[in-house]
Length: 481
Image (cartoon, rainbow, N blue to C red):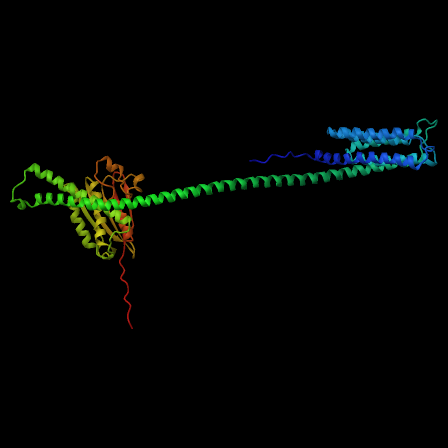
């Protein structure tokens, strides 16, 4: 909603509007005074001295001038209205001063000419200076001519001369007062404009506040609905999460029993022929049994990862945080990594600093994290090197890393590879096996041990996975005094 623009009058229009209001009041007062004057004259003087016919024509002139003035004002013809009022009044005064001598009522008729200065002053207030000068000339003409109409000789009395002097004085005063009136009109117009601008600003501000309030109310309602939906979704997700955890735990337990049997029997048939009276297996059988054994191991690892993930989500993962020496872990995982690399032309390197401090964590989980990183590196590296490194970056942390020369990770996927069931697109395109759980579980395990994990990678050149573990601090033993 916008404010309706208010038209701004110019100075002349504003001053004219003020004068029109004064003129509207003036013609009403004049008409009432004229009628009162006639009534008083008829009551207070005898009809032998004052004839009603002598008053009839002046009163008609005043009444016509006032009515014509009213008609012009209603049509917004201000200047014509002024001249109608002034002309009718001047003509009435001139008719009343037409005859007279030096006594009685005739003397009163001569004194009527002193109304002309008042009329000149009114013209100066109501119209610009040129109109005042025109009214002055007309008034002088009427004062000089009308009293001598019907006389044999032309005579200019002292009364007429004094009336002319007063008219000149009134014209001068009107000229001065007219300038002051325009100054007042300018000040009033400026005040009006300021008030108009303030009113528009307040109106616009009010509309903006109302719109802001409505928007805020709508946003509050939307936020309430969103919160309710989020709460419902959270409850549903929590229920689904609990159900998923329970389902995974049950399925893991049910799957492990037959899977362990498959792995156990296939391993026995491959590695312990004495259990079968040293009967050799045909080559084709041995190849298939090896595939069954490897697939069973892979499936068991996947089930273990899912179970670990479920335990972490429910806070039921058993972890023994203790003083851990990294050296035995490094030796063990590198020995295992030889089997992960297989016959690929890959060198296993070690860049661990000497005299590393002990760390705080669970040795089995640390070994699991490193093996996950080495397993990923072997999957996505066809040749080159895989390096296991470690250093102490500060008094509080030890940084461990696994660097490979594999296919690398696209920049847009680096933030996603630690999510559950997510795997890089480059690995999927090349048919790399993986569940997408190793990195997710590793990050959760490291968080539980007070560490953190991140990756740096260049597509086509390799990746470096880093993680930190807190340095183990021995608590001081309190001495008993």
